Length: 357
Image (tube, rainbow, N blue to C red):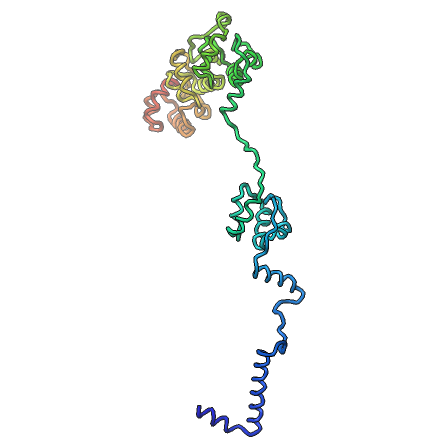
C-alpha cells in the first residue's frame, strides 16, 4: 500500500488531474447505466432479420404453448399440422423424420418411442389419436380345413386307378388327397388293394375308414398283372414299378446295377443314391439275385479309363493296376492283385465277383 502511494506521489500534477477526471467519468457512466433508463441502449445478440424466429423460439421456451387438438392419424400428418396443434418443434421434427424414414405407428403407445416425447404431452395426445387397424393376414389351418370339409361333396364310389383328379373330387375325395393319388399314379404306382391308399401322404386311419366303402378296385384287380418277385440283375423299370417302387428310385437302381455289372447281394442296395428304407425292405422281400448274370471285367484287357468307372475302383487304383500290368505283362490272380497293397483288404470280397483273370 505504501508502495502504491509513493508511485502516485511521483505523478506530475497534470497526470494526477487526468487520472482524477477519468475515474470520475467512469463512476458516473456506471451509475447512470444502472439507474437512468435508456442511458445505454442494449442491442440484441441475434441478427435483426431473424429476430421474429428467435423471439418465437424464446417465447416457446418461456411458456408452454396451448395444444389445439382434434382427432388425427399420427401416420398421416405434415410438420405444419403438428405446429398448428401446438406440438413443440423438437418433437414435431423427430416425428416427421421418423415417418420419412419409413417408420409407422401401429399402436398409440408407439408414439412414446419418439425422441423427446414427454409423458405429459403423450397423455394429452393419446385420446385424440386414431390409428386404423388393418385386418390381420394369417392362415388358420383348422379354419381352412373346416372350410374345405364343408365344400367337400358327399362320397361316391370311385376307382383310384382310373379316375382323373376332377372325377375324384366329384366323388367326394378331398382335393389334396385326389392330387396325391394322381401324383402316385404318374410316378408309376398302382392301387392293387384298398389298403394301398394308406401309403399316400395325409391318408390316416380315420379318413381311410371313410373312403373304404367307396373304393372300387376289385373289378380292375383281375386285369392288372401284378409282379410278386423279380430278379435284380435282369429286372426292368416297369417291373420295379409294379412292386410299388417309385419311378425315379427304380431308375437309380437300374443305373447303379449297370455301373456295377450286376448285384451279388441285397446289401448293395444300400449303396444306391437316395434309396429309401421302404424300397430296400420291399426288394429284400420281393426279389432274388442270379450272380451268373453279373458282367465281369477282364483285368488284363480293360483299359485304365473303363476300369476306373467301376464303383469299387478309384482312378488312382486303376492307374496303379495299369502300371503294374505293363510291368508284369499279366495279372494271374486276385491274390496277386491284392498283394500289391494298392487296395483295401475289405474290398476283396466285393471285387471277386467282378474281376476276371
